[in-house]
Length: 386
Ligand SMILES: Cc1ncc(COP(=O)(O)O)c(C=O)c1O
Image (tube, rainbow, N blue to C red; front, side, top):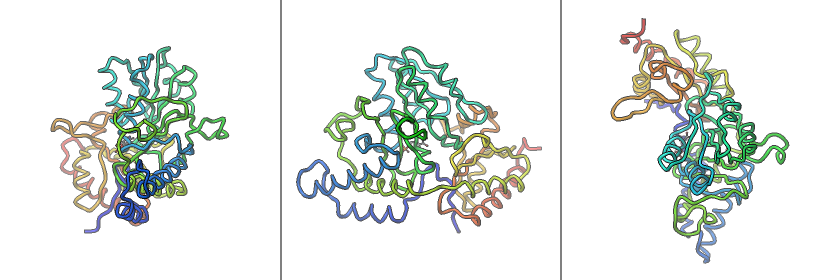
């Protein structure tokens, strides 16, 4: 059976040229980047090249890049690294963050910090004035994701960073779903002639832009001090202990260079949206009126169970995702979809399609046909669909 992949927000396949370099480095680059001999210095050169390439993707300086084991660690390092030991005991985040951020803040609450969770509107947009209202004199950190993994909505990070800074707080953004999909300039507006985000910390993950899994990075603006999460050697300028995974990081560097040049278009995603709209009755597009990354579409199919749709499409050869998460054996609706005001039933009836460079018009048309057939079949069996 032909298989089609429409779940690029979960993870992306490694690009061919990235895989080629990754395999070469796994074989040829056996040194430890901390060793002073030839093999160590070869590894060090590759590591520093990767740092320049990742810095390039974010419009940062290489010294501001700390390599991590992925997006989760980068988010955790940003949050715990700035808050533990901080005399300011309050932080602000949003209700639609990824668990890598939400659960880090839940842990901070366990440790005695106060956290304010700012809600979004029905389009998945967090109003800048809501962030401003949540700030307190003791706010140490504001953390707002750049692009949402389920809806694709993009927040006004530059404006939020600005209000956080005016209150003397640091600003972190989880950029895991933005990196590789939209241009990113982490620098302050004044430096970047208006286009920059002006954040202090920015997390990315290699496997979301065609690099191997298990590598990521945290941008840490020059001058921001971080407490490490891991204690050990003085790797990454004392900010992240542990021998660096040089082959995978070098592969991520190459993927970052490709991503920097790529110009992702929303054409296919918009085609998918139009075709679904004309082919299937009683559907609603979730949060499509907000600025979005170009590859994501979230759709509610009234009267169905998203999980059943995922399985039905899988049997037809299509990999898609429902935002629902399995918790203690029960399928729980997505917290993001509930946050935009969907009912539990609507949230559980929603599917995320996330496209990538290997998808084409024919694949999208085949997908629409499969979705229409699955939807009709599931609705015939549905006790709630009239
Ligand atoms: C928005 C967001 N943040 C963080 C993560 C975690 O990244 P990683 O899988 O590299 O730990 C993900 C992964 O899905 C994500 O979508």
